[in-house]
Image (cartoon, rainbow, N blue to C red; front, side, top):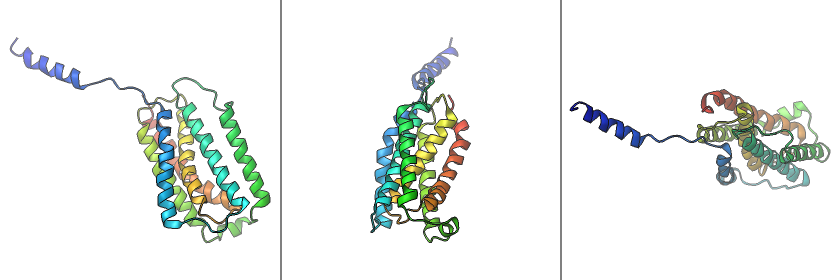
Length: 211
């Protein structure tokens, strides 16, 4: 009985300290998106400033990135639910992606015309890729840390949605500065900048997002 008393106290102490963990729903992390946009926006604009020659093509580019961001945020919310959801038939996802495609199609008409070789030699190409890629990677890692206890029904779709959302936060803000509106440049620069975030997100998804 003398030896059992300390053990009982230890058990009681552990039972008091240990509390059951609750699954983290990724939709709860989406409240961070506006705050992240404000932080990235203030930091980016303070260093780079705004573009000086706003045209219709520039507005279409920023609007396309914004629609894609909203679509991927919706994908994250649906893919992160513990229960099964119809992602590809969701009206918000379909509408956002179709709107993005439509705006990019308009950019092919009203935007500047650049060949692949011309886009590759544009002086701002690597600055754009680096800025958006670094922003996307940092936000991707932050969102993964927030969703470490998530139990998503579709972890890979959640990973892709998380990476694209993170990159589009950087893309929307950087597009306020970027003066190049050619579709070829946009696909190469912003598309290339999104790939590292997708790879990192998929790499860590299986390790972090399990219950």
